[in-house]
Length: 304
Image 1 (spheres, rainbow, N blue to C red):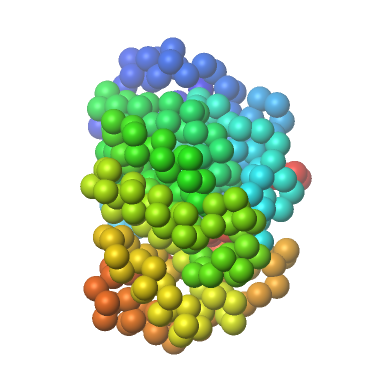
Image 2 (tube, helix red, strand yellow):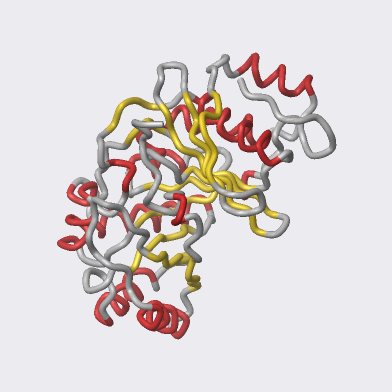
């Protein structure tokens, strides 16, 4: 298992030994890093079976967020996301998930403040390993990342949302929505054929009622695909009935998807309409796209 430097910003050797006892050695190693210190960096992590995954470090002032992968590949095949373009290989173990955080901490020389399960893979398709990894990340005697500083992102696996609602502790839940009509979401995200929008929104509403936690909806704005005034109005109608937040994202380029990002004016129209209807929303800055490290760009590494 990876180690991180000793000192006030890192767990002690005793803590690392206890983590190693709970999570077996995985021989995860850093194969390559891209980016500059103090900016977004991508780490290519090699695994024991010669698979390789990608992990991202995102600094913002005193905050250091680590974006971890949960699978080698992804079976969900979202059209605008690189992670599923070459299919699914296997699930990561809990130890391999934790190792990404430890390797990132070693790389930046301090504990991360936030961990997001938003890398390669659908976390709820590897539910048990994801949930097993969280205590090692949150434990006060370990990495000590607060449970509310952890976010699990799903493409909309309703059984996973329902299971998470029954857990004793709840990290932030982020749901990739990206469309307001089933016909559009079917094309963007094939998972919608199994879990269509009305069922997904209903599950999120129940999750909020059960946990008293606000769901975050992710919406990537794609020019002339999901960014019309009608889309904005339908989004307001869909989400106005229960407490939630919306993150609007810029479409990041991948070779396999030819569509273009929406304009800033269009993003502003969405933001204004949601604000007028008292729905909290923000436009997330795209960071790391030049490294292939931005949302939708992480993938299984086949050549080094």
